[in-house]
Image (tube, rainbow, N blue to C red; front, side, top):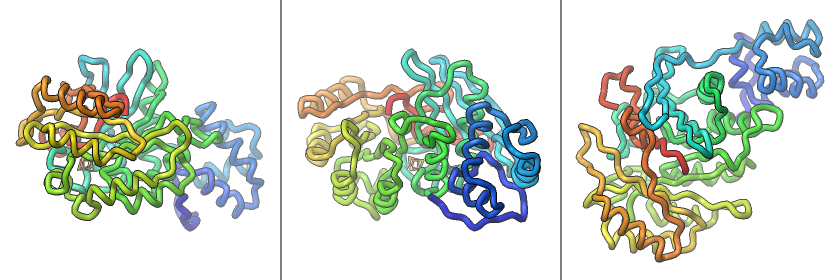
Length: 363
Ligand code: SF4
């Protein structure tokens, strides 16, 4: 949890305010901490964003809250609808920065893929978001706000959340962790930890800190190569945290019973899709509790990469299944609207052909 010093100099967005932070503020105000629960119930259960209507609070507390907090969600600038039922949302933030989220409904679940950074600095060579560089980190309220804005206008509620949009979540550590606490808190948004997945390119130091957060959130690790030379090319972060270091971290990562990690592997023709790659991948993952998602690459104009042929994809998958790995081929949702894995790039804002992240449905 991020402990920030109390800043009473200007009003804050309530949606970025964690339970711990509000308790700290109420304590400074000499207000009973159980009042935090009452306020959260009004906001997150009754969707009340007018303090004056919170009638079980004293009038003085209501006006003090109104003086110190406001409610603001990111503005939906544009919706792009896919043939497969997905919708890509472009959000305009207060400073004009654009970020994107993807809503992916299906028969069994409604998944929201949300962004944690505007752009990304990890520079993965297959990712369109990387072309933006890092514009800035999102605040907790901007992360939560994507969820609240989409949930507020969809008839069917969001059931699953994946942190796989623009940005590397663990590179914006504090705001992401605060957002996760708000999402999973029984006092606030009450989303099950089982229904949330955070994707990472493998920031091992942050993964070690993250496992101590008492969050039990699912982790999806983008591996994408079976040897360090290839991974260095695809994901420069590998030079800092090579495969053996990442795998060692995953082997030691504490998991709740019946949970396992997700290994993401973007399949690139003639780069990482050979039989030898499949063999090496199986060897690396032998003692890692995991399932494997194979993601055929989504081509975009400026990319040098191509997806493998269908037969190659199935051979790769079958080899891993024969090695007793639960292995799935994930067909990207929203690919026709540049909303799929590695294609979020806030193109309307930067006038580039689409970007990052990953927005497939079943991490
Ligand atoms: S794949 Fe993820 S970590 Fe890599 S550049 Fe794209 S957004 Fe960043």
